Image (cartoon, rainbow, N blue to C red):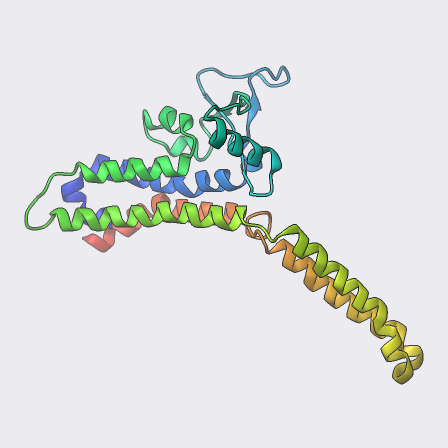
Length: 254
């Protein structure tokens, strides 16, 4: 859609918006799974840091509602109004790697300082679109708000992904389900031995394997971002669709 209104937005601004859009899935992945970010400590003597190509930033923290330390700090801030959060360790990344090389100009340093980097990218894209001048009747406030609406959908997807990641099945429920399943399987042979005889053992073993497998699969898909989904493939596909195929896609507007 940005390419459709390039005559009003401008070529250079379209390129900046496309780069921000291509970096969004990578930053969202780092937000949900901080362990995937190739961070190196400033004081790590085993790695030589190139000041010209290194970007200083603080690591993201994947917060979950089951973390007692985070909950205690949050309650303390509500009651006393003071913050006693632990200071984060300063790290660095190579700005020549993805997604940092996609961020244009000054946006790189500003994005690195942000607490929520994918949200910062959405705000930046909305800002780029909000200051575009009207070219009546082809580009007016209606077209501008439509484009900003797409950015708003991206920002909502951040919250949706974080809700999936942070909201876990209650621990008491998971434990009770496992105990109930175990008790049922322990008593199953007594109900089958009269009819199956020597086949009771193999049948119970197969049933146990199936039911415990279903239980294990359920615990894994509870948070699909922790290994179930190949997020790197999705990020690479989006980047290629936005940037690598841009020349070919431009022919659609000729």
